[in-house]
Image (cartoon, rainbow over all chains, first blue to last red; front, top):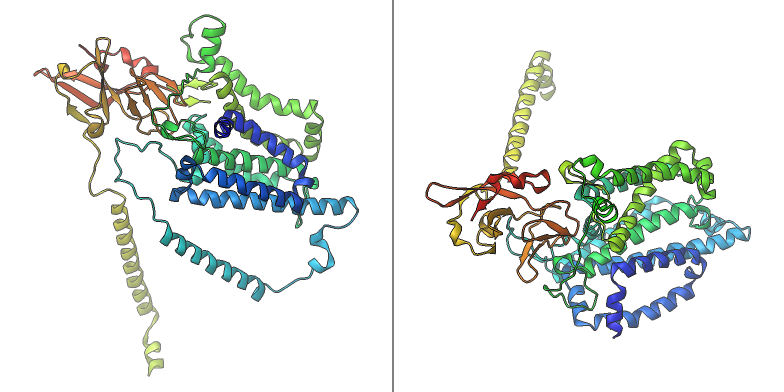
Length: 360
Length: 167
């Protein structure tokens, strides 16, 4: 009963909004989340829940795959590191509000040490510990070798390495050209552009959230929700035929999911206007093209004029930085938008021009 | 003694030694590079033949026939009086879909793209239908499948008489 509920809730249609709301609440009440009491209570709650999850044979069989063990380490580390940063930021923000300097700037923390031996020794021990860990790992968990490669056969489900499963999950909603080349390229380009776009001098050398709200929110949303969450979905919730399976569900190869995806052009021309698809390709896709162009080119100037946050941002960054920043943000939000459109309207592509290998 | 021998190396000799050294170094490097380049080509090519003879049209029952899937990557689909050779490569990102006889569809294990028996896409992210290969009859009445020529539905190429056989 409870297991069925968890299966239902973990469907991306429900879990994605839940994770987004959870993310919003985490940052809104970050001073509560950042307390040690909160961390103890969460850990105390998570231990019985995890045990309950592991007691299920279907879930356990996914977890114990050697491929999936790093993701458990990843989840624990991401959880801890995120909480640790919030904890430090909450402490510092309380001090800054009280008119004190951040903890990192107190006289006892400003004391300097030599990089030799202090830093080099630490690095040496980290290196040795890491190597020892990898050796033990390699002895305990064998590399999962499968049958030899066959160009006319693919395993089912065919899964990328766990760290790429977020990208693979993205590919469910996009053309490979978009999700495989353009969006990952923009992630890299965007990360390179960060120091040039970010003009906020605060938060240098100390933890803070209040002084860098926008930067931290944008980064953490992309990292926690659009990357880590999608990896979790890809690892735990995608089974044969890339169909969704709840964490307690058996991976039944014959699970039938009725889905029929349509392009925006089909929805508008056939369903709404009641006429067939026009022969001319550009006319056929004109609504999608207008929408996409408007999304990229109209929202930034509108936000700079009409919204308070946009006006401030425009003044702080200047026109060039502002438009580059907004372009990157809009490309990032195109992923959740496309996911939601797929779930709500079974929308396949906004612009579908397979004749030109162009699908948005 | 050693001081004298160093002195005996004059400018011309020094440069000829240097030239010999550089020529040998360059030769060794380019030889190594050529060896590395050779490694980029496979010793054995496991790719299936691009053309094959697929028996008589009467060999195929109605529906999807998987006998050439593993050897040549081709599904023979007989439906509505036509026999076609469908490519088994997903048009989304090039995985190999599976034929699910119970659900009467091709389903890709990588991102969940789905195709009807005819090869038309209907679910998942795939933007276009599976591709057809050229099929023709030999003088002895056997089918010849030519994978070098493909026919794409969205370009209207499935109307081409080379893309199917009347049965």
